[in-house]
Each structure stands twice: as structure tokens, then as C-alpha cells.
Length: 225
Image (cartoon, rainbow, N blue to C red):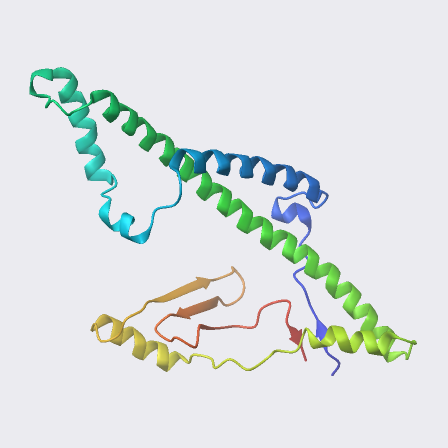
């Protein structure tokens, strides 16, 4: 049977992103983010070294509560303030913590949007690529001059570079037991997607193996015999 290459072929409206958005618009966003990054760099200075990170305490939830309450008490009971204490410094640091947390939340949202965009436009680009690939393949079969050489070059990119050893279910079960008993380092993540009318599809990522990463069902976009 002839090889048939399939893509996801999802319409743009199904993904919630306009397929007609030009790269220039994303370039504008990149320029603005680059400007914001420069401002942050100027405010926070060069990145911390690993040794500096280990020395600094930071402010988690509990420490932030202590900071907040200390600021209130220092304002209410100034007679207990030591000579080297600065209430203005404390207020400024607390404000900056809150501002940076807001920036962190925003950056996480940006990262998620960027990841979604890469999937959407990656899918869009691959669909167009498959159209061209299938056209060249068909013309190659018809012995159109130049098509065979071009098809062979494109087809090289569809050939796997090597067979990755897949993790079997018994191996995963053994690794789960090892992790539960504390005899092995690592983690195992199992994701399951179950449509309404057909059986579910699951992906297992077993990070207890250094040279093997996951086993999963056949995905769309692969070459199917």
C-alpha cells in the first residue's frame, strides 16, 4: 500500500487564533517584550550566581506574612525599632515583591500563550508542507523531470534517524514500584485523554531512564504505511 502522510488539518477558528496574523505583528510584540526585559535587567542587575542564590533567603508565603506583619508593628510601635532599621526600605522591598509577583504571573501567561502559538502555527506550517510534499511525490511517480530528485531530498527528512528503544508497560510498573519503595530516583508522569466515543490515548513519560523518554500511541503527522 502506498504511503499516506496525514496532518492534523485543524481550521484556524478551531484553535482560536487568526491564521492571517502576520509575522510583523509578532515582531512588534517581541520588540516591546525586549524593551521590558531591558528595563528589568537594569532594575535587578546581572543574574545571581548559584552561590548567591543559595545565600539569599527570598520571601515565600510564610516569610511574606512575617514581613507584612513586621511592617505593621514597626509602624505602630516605633519605640521598638532598632537604630539600623529602615521602615521605608521595608515598605519599598515589600512593594517590589508584590510587583515582581505580578510580573511573574504575567510572564507565565505569556509563556503559555507562546507555547500554544508555536503549536498552532507549527501545525499550520506542517499542513502546508505536507501539501507540497504530497504534490512532489505524485509528480515524481509520474516521472516529471526534476521531481524524483526533489522528492528524495524531502523524503530524507521524514526518515527517522534511528530507532529509539520504547519503554514497555512491565518496565514502567517495575519503575513505579521502585519509586514507591525509594530504591530509584526519578519520576513517572501518565497523561490520559479519553474521547467520548472511542478509547482513550495515553502517554507515559518515564524519567527514571536516562536514554529513553516515553512510549505513546501513533500520533497524527507521521508517515503511515
